[in-house]
Length: 113
Image (tube, rainbow, N blue to C red; front, side, top):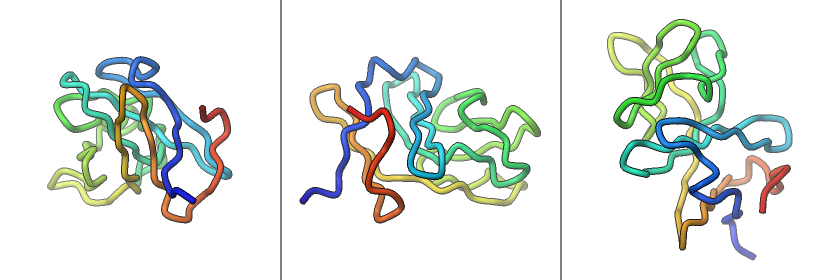
């Protein structure tokens, strides 16, 4: 049995934007950069739990819409001098389909393909 779950197509994620998918008790934001790189981050800012999916994507970072905390999409770490870290998930893209590895967090995503 594969640990990878197909969750979206690249085209369903807006460039420089996000799409939210729902895992059992959490939301995961799929981000797409200007270079069509895809990242998956728990949709909760570590500072005030703001919805990261509503933030501004710039380069390989996202800025929280509530308090302007900037996070690296690759590892979820806050850009200094801020502190904190959001949970990130491994992603792979095959033939324009996005796959996520939840590593035991949840085995089923609502609305996945």
